[in-house]
Image 1 (tube, one colour):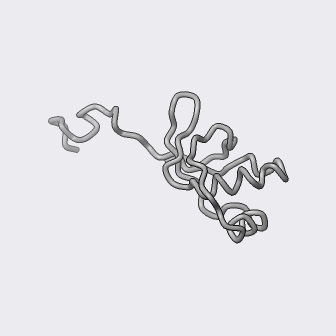
Image 2 (cartoon, rainbow, N blue to C red):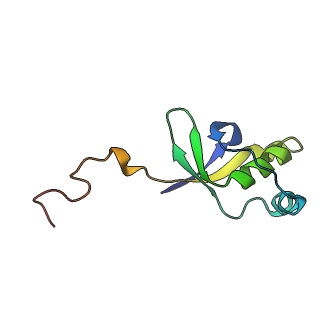
Length: 92
């Protein structure tokens, strides 16, 4: 997994309703747990963190610093070959 900061506009997420407590908490402390994303061609797909992204979108209208989001890029092994999963004669 890779951790980095990306622009909120590069993350595709489902906009959900967030309560004021979450917005206030992020405003004061920023996000404590990075948003989990999957890397696609030209954007990131949110796996976990739709509420955090929705709250950041609200806060970004007030302050541009909330446009940068800490993310964890989760590995996608769906395209890995059989050698990756251990279907080889090499067992070391």
